[in-house]
Image 1 (cartoon, rainbow, N blue to C red):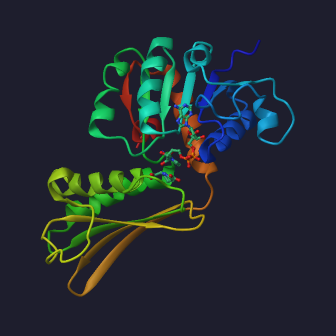
Image 2: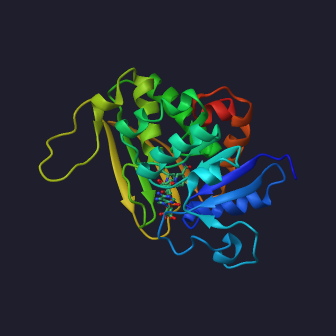
Amino acid sequence: MSDLPGIVITGASGRMGQMLIKTVLDSDKARLVGVVERAGHDWVGRDVGEAMGGAALGVTVTDEPLEAFAKAQAVIDFTAPAATVQFAKLAAQARAVHVIGTTGMTEDDIAQLEPCARHAVIVRAGNMSLGVNLLTLLTKKVAAALDEEFDIEVVEYHHRHKVDAPSGTALMLGEAAAEGRGVSLTDVADRGRDGITGARKRGDIGFTAIRGGDIIGEHDVMFACDGEQIILRHKATDRSLFAKGALRAALWGQDQKPGEYDMLDVLGL
Ligand SMILES: NC(=O)c1ccc[n+]([C@@H]2O[C@H](COP(=O)([O-])OP(=O)(O)OC[C@H]3O[C@@H](n4cnc5c(N)ncnc54)[C@H](O)[C@@H]3O)[C@@H](O)[C@H]2O)c1
Ligand SMILES: O=C(O)C1=N[C@H](C(=O)O)CCC1
């Protein structure tokens, strides 16, 4: 039996679930030991390789997460907020590193991770790519250098299936801009304009969400004043970059003490 870290992927049939399974199978640093789907899904009970349209892999899709997590060193989870909160409790019970890519989590959801992180490593980020995490640092720096004469707007573009807005990445960028300005994002976020909104409030950080087609994920941070605009942009052209980042986080987490971490910790940025 190999001593490579065993990984469980949740949300196996999802866009990211399938990409994560391929990424783990292609890696020589980890092995796939389990895959989880929600109860009632037609993949449950099937070999995951065959369910994905290929050869059998000897790994059966299960709807019993704790049984799967007990055999793993890490769980990589890109599902939905309610599922992720449940998985955090079970990963903590199994002492498995929990890498969370799920977005759209409320403050209450996030608060429920804290007791879990006393027992296990949690790495959570709205975007697992190097480029976006670097962009958060640039955004913070630019926001700190400019005063409120510059209006900050975050514009995000995603595929038609995305269910949450603003995207997790947009919120990371908004947080970075607010930090750079020395304000709380909660106090200045303007997340939905419709109707007679009144003029833009000085100091606000605005968010706009575009949804269409198969856009994987694009983000602009605009700093606009009278006479000039600066636009910082990230464009994802392949979901594998999120999956590779998540696997990197799962491996990095093996050597960490229990606690909550993000991708800046993983990347050492
Ligand atoms: N952090 C990042 O880098 C990053 C990148 C891409 C997507 N995401 C996020 O990942 C999440 C998933 O995105 P997607 O495009 O793969 O969505 P998707 O709808 O294609 O997949 C979600 C999967 O989760 C499964 N699921 C839901 N509840 C479950 C449960 N209780 N148990 C097991 N499985 C369950 C669904 O059946 C589905 O297969 C979203 O929140 C998205 O925003 C994050
Ligand atoms: O496809 C998605 O959904 C994505 N979600 C993340 C977000 O909310 O920022 C990352 C980009 C893709």
